[in-house]
Length: 377
Image (cartoon, rainbow, N blue to C red; front, side):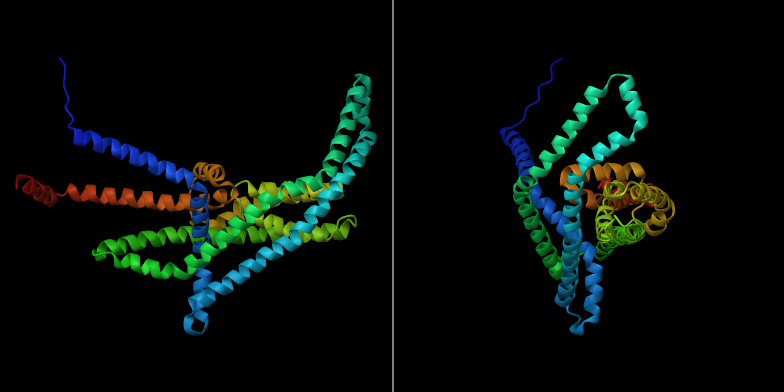
C-alpha cells in the first residue's frame, strides 16, 4: 500500500527557509566565535568585579558607580603591571641561564652517573650515547642562538594578545558601568510579577555560583602562591646559588597558573621545581616534595572548605567542562568553564523543578477537571 503525502509550495519554501536560516546563523556564530569569546570573557570579568565595585561605590561620596569602577580597574591594572614587572625578567634570566648551563649539565651527568656509564660500556652503547649527548648540546646552543629570532616572530602574537586584553578590559568596564541600568530595564519588561520574581531568583542563583567560585578560587590560589613563595624564599637563604627574585616569580606564576582548574597547580609546581633544579638539584627536590604534600592538604582540606557548595559539580562534569573550555576558548575558556557549567547546572535544575511542579499540578483532581472542561468547550 502506497501512501502519498502532499506538501503545498508555501510549506515547502517555509521549511527550507528555516533550514537555510539556521545554517546561516550557525555560520555567523562560527565566524564571530573569537568576538563572542571576548564578549563572554568580558561578561565573566564584569560579574567577578561587580561586588567589589558595588562595595567601593557605596563608600564613595554620592555612591558613584563610575568612581567605584574606576578604582577597581586601577587596582586591576596595577596588579597586571606587577605581574609583568616581577615575572617577565626572572623568566628571561632563568631561561638564558638554563640554555647556557645545558651543555655543562650534560657533561656533569655523564661524569657522575657511574652505574649508568658501566652499563653503557658493558653493552657497547658508548658511541650511540656520545652521539646523542653531543646532539643535545648542539641543539641547545642552536636554540640559544635563535632566541632573538623567536622573540621577534612572537611580537605579532603578543600584539594580538594585548589588543584582546585591552578590548576585554574596556568591554568589562562598560558592562560594569551600564550593567545595573540594563538590568533594571530588563526587569521592567515583565508584566507578570510572579514570573519576574522567579526569574530574579534564578539569575541570583547563577550570579552567586559565578561570584562564589571566583572568590573561592582566588582565595585558594592566593594561599598556594604565598606559601610557595615563602618556601622558595627560605630555599634561597639556605642555598646561596638560588636568587631570591625567584620567590616573587613563584608567587606570581603560582597565583596565575593555579587559577586554571585541575591542571594549573600541577603546571605551576612542575615549572617552579624545574627552575630550582636548574639552580640546585637538592633545592628542586625539596620544593617538589613540598608541592606534593601541600597539594594533598589543599585538595582534601583547604579547597573543599573554601569552595564547598559554591558550584557543586562532579569530577566528571568539571573535567568535561574544562576540556571543552580549553578547546573552544584556550586558556581563558578553561578559566570560565567551571562557573559556566555551574550556571548551566542551575538552569537545568530550575527546569526540572518547574517540570516536576507542573506535572504534580496536572495530576491533581481539580486540575484534571478544569483541563477536561477546557477540552470539552
